[in-house]
Image: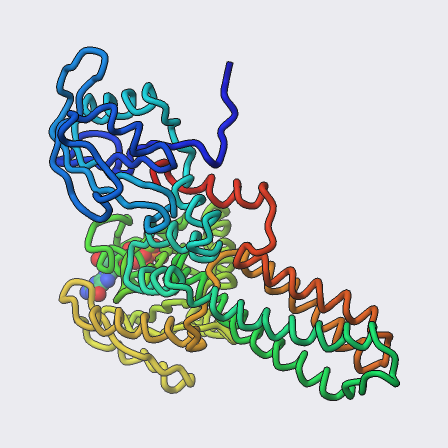
Length: 459
Ligand SMILES: Nc1nc2c(ncn2[C@@H]2O[C@H](COP(=O)(O)OP(=O)(O)OP(=O)(O)O)[C@@H](O)[C@H]2O)c(=O)[nH]1
Ligand SMILES: [Mg+2]
């Protein structure tokens, strides 16, 4: 019969990737972790409460046969001073599949249960060591590939978002106390707070929320990567630029205009940002149906881009297709690039005459301007940063903030319109609870399962 997992079981899992490696780490966490592990250790080398924070070199054996499985290093962290807030042991063993498998098998035979994905971090949350935004940051830190993603996951793991939302929530709690006090007492017993004062306090919290929300766009760029299509008329060198930035021959390059029909997306680290470069079909007012479909897709990509790289071929005349693209770029963030700078400027290549000012010139064969382009891309992406450390990086956090903002706006409107305090107080309470969703003060099992289910096993 399957045993229902409980939060107070002692759990075990491999915390390093499965497969071969020099070393592997198996973690055990829970009140029984020491007694379980001691069953596998020689009597003179067992863990006691004095072993906290110390490394112990010992052997692990199969208690039923006495066979030595491995020589290991154990590190013991006594509750509550551990990652999970429970008694926790990290077993550094040799990184062979058999050894890892045997240690897991012997631990479960001795009473541990194999951990669910993210269960160690879930226990850190349930034990009150970290809040939900910090738990999410652990997952972000593990998946961070570039500097900017790493920086924000570290800030969030250290509690930047938690502190900011807790501060805003405390302001709402004060507000709620003010309003509810008036509900409990008559006007003779308490001097009512003027509605202007209440409105001002609501506005202050709204401004705080706005500051964090403003940075969501940047948070998405940092976490999921910036969407950066390379566009231009056919043959300007878009696919060549993609290849240059990736430093590999990823897209097909030919001298025939209209080579790229379907877009290709590749992720690359550009000066610390994860950039999702998209090579697109060249835009021209011609071509047969397949090419036309490709061009339609390019226009969609222009609309959803965080930043566009627009190429102009300096070795050919500036044409109607270029001018048409320019009109499509209105109100979009883009960098204008003069391509093929190793070739002479065509005498009819005159962007300045059309009020187009190239930001820089590049050449794929010589590499001229490519480093400058990387720097320019990162500095343009940094413009999205509202300078806020408490940045939200996922839709769950954004939704909670937006619900809180909506409730506060309703409370503000009611305050201005002299609607009774009992109505205002309901909206204020809602706003408070929605903010609590970010840190996990208010949460459901479903939300927790959804968040921790996305972690890998052993984290
Ligand atoms: N001299 C020179 N030639 C280049 C440069 N970049 C690309 N080319 C050449 O220009 C031609 C077109 O390059 P592609 O990269 O395929 O251009 P594209 O914009 O992707 O073209 P389509 O996919 O047809 O829209 C090829 O013959 C390339 O070798 C450059 O910087 N200098
Ligand atoms: Mg191409």
